[in-house]
Image (cartoon, rainbow, N blue to C red; front, side):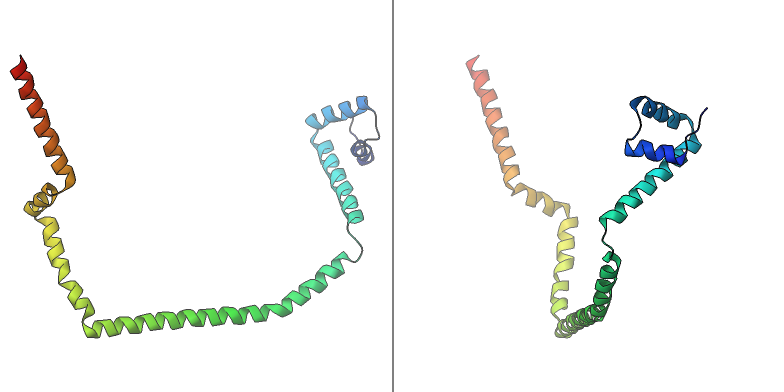
Length: 159
């Protein structure tokens, strides 16, 4: 089995070899792990060279300068976060104070009287049937039942 050098793989990547040799090299890549590593390193080198040509020489310096400017602005944002967190603390404190005022005035005590009554109504089965009987679905069911029984009676009279 013939192994290919990095230079040959670079020629393959650049498309500077014939179709027959390209096919042979592709078939060889399927079987040979060491050539696959050589091919991948050649692709990486070609991509790095291409990337260097696309990026200007002062690119890194420009990015670093912009990052330094952004770093100077970060403390201002943290001050805003502190003010937001202190605002949230103020809101929760106000809500707790209002709750204490309601507790001292007995607002929640008046609500407490309704809870046992409501619970009792939910448990009491006779109240449930009265509640359901006054519902529209129960009345509809009663109406349909009466009508069907009337039709049955009419059918018996006709026979």
